[in-house]
Image (cartoon, rainbow, N blue to C red; front, top):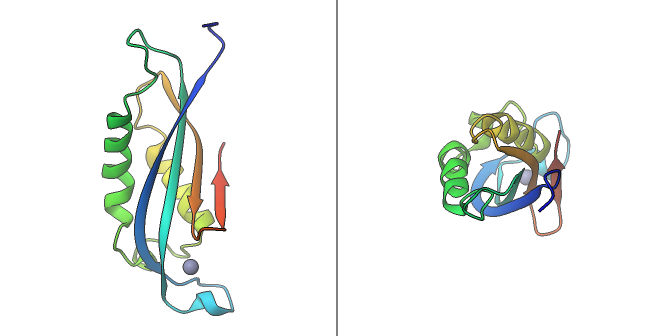
Length: 122
Ligand SMILES: [Zn+2]
């Protein structure tokens, strides 16, 4: 494979949390919950073992640093305004330096409902 090509790896996670939006007027200013779907995409070069990153390692990093902190929590205890946008930015900052140097975080996609998602990348 040519050296300048990257391979993208995505893993999907789920967590359930409560929140209400501050600085907002409408239904979502009341406490309610979501079953969030989180898609984490990393990119990197192929290693000698034929993988970019072991899915099990990706799972462990995201579970320990993100899912365990957000799942079954009231997000307003953790964020000033837990919009999907703010949660995405926080997830990026939490994960950014957690991977080996051959792996870069590429994109975070956070689905708040089946139809609504926020995409964050730098
Ligand atoms: Zn909501």
